[in-house]
Image (cartoon, rainbow, N blue to C red; front, top):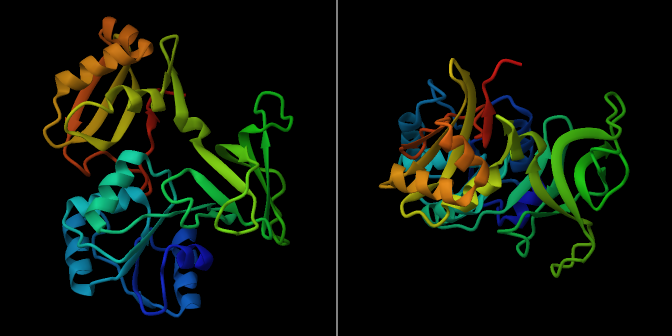
Length: 308
């Protein structure tokens, strides 16, 4: 992670706030990376972890020059009044274009991403050229990544990502299924780093869900409402079973966004939602920024609440 921080512009002169969940592997990795950089690690912790107002008050007092954390917690802190900083590094979940634009405008800094997970640690980093894309330099000296067709298990240019850690001995990880989807990129990067490139497409289980015989795709929902005035950068699809059958409830964050406009955009832009709407199984809600529920400080695009 120290490499990712350097590429994000962190220096030893920075005062860094580590906003990952305390005790989690990302928090520990960021803590160690800040020490490697020689930067000042700010003691960020509050008596009530979910209290955004208390967290923002502490950050305003600490005055960090750099921040590392997940997009979901940063969006909530920005909505609570988080002041601008010089450098930012995000990881732990996907950063969608709408969220990136909002965060970069609010914080006054470009936001590169780090790719990793709990079991494997850091897998990929973004150089300055890859910022704003879903592409990463894979740390091939530490991990070996494969892409397979999830249906056949055979190698593919696009599909499910498997990782083998090259240095683990006490807990070997061999062809470990991350639950992520990606695409191999054969072209090199103009930055000069001689590391293979991967384009991350998202979580396999968060990309789509089957409801009432229809396949609902999260990216198509995002595309359908992109032109609606006032819509925010985050949304969440929640599926549940009711006495009348299955119901899809979609929460959108937005200041001044019209529920009716969103509903009409979904009905016109996505056939699966049009069918659900005709059945009375589609509910659209507009909530304030930061109100969409998170899980471990992340915002899953799809939450399936039906009994398994």
